[in-house]
Length: 236
Image (cartoon, rainbow, N blue to C red):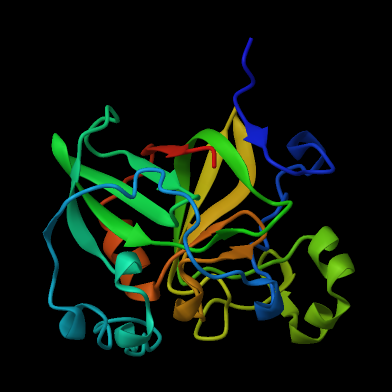
C-alpha cells in the first residue's frame, strides 16, 4: 500500500514527533533559497489580478496592525491572482505545489485563486493529503523542543503563553495574522498554513515544513477555507 505521506530528505519519522511535531514552522532567514525551480502546476493561464496596491496595503479591522507589503519587491509569480485550474481537485479544496511555490484554492470548476508561498527547506519537505482541522486568529507560536535545540537563540524570544513557552500572537509572532492547522491520519501533523513576518520569503524554501503566506493572503484564504477543507501537498 502506498504510504499517505512521503518526505524527500528526512532523517526521522513524522510519527516520532507527536502533536507538537514541527509546529514551530519557522526558520531564520539564512536558510532561505530563492526562486522557483520546478514547473509543477505553475503552467496556468492568469484570468485576472487584483489591484495590488489595495490588496497588499494595510489590512483594516485587525486586533494588531497588518502593515502594507512592498509587493513590487516580490516576484509577480508569487502575488495573488485568479488562474485557470484544469486539474481534478474539487471546488473548495486547497492544493500546495512546493516545487512552484504556489498554493491554489479551487474557487469553481476550472478556476482557482493562486497565492505565492514559502515552503520547507531541504530536509523538511513533505507531501500527501491532509485536512484543515483547526483555525486560529493571531495564534501564539510555540516552537517544539527540536527547533529550540537546533537554534538555541530562539529561547531568548520566548515567554509564557497558554500553550507553553512561545511568542504570543501579535505583530512579533512568526505565525503572522492567521494559522490553519493540518491534520491527517487522525492527528495533528505539526504543519500549518500561516502568515509571516517576512513576506519577501514567499517563493523560497525557508520553513520547517509549514506553508507560509503573505499576511494579506492568509487572511484572504482564511475566510474561504473552512474547517474540514481537504489539502493536498504535491511532491516536488
